[in-house]
Image 1 (tube, one colour):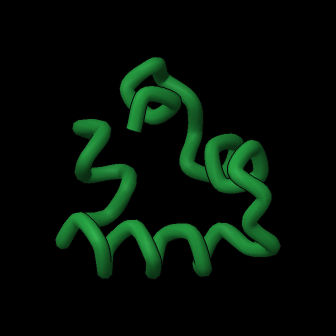
Image 2: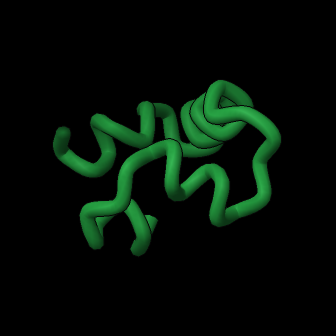
Length: 43
């Protein structure tokens, strides 16, 4: 969440966290927080 608020792209955050695909990161983020990373970051 800090990385997203700092202005990093969803792709950059997912790679930094070790996800094999951006879609996997988005799916998990949405499942846990109920929104997409982009919406969470206000984009």
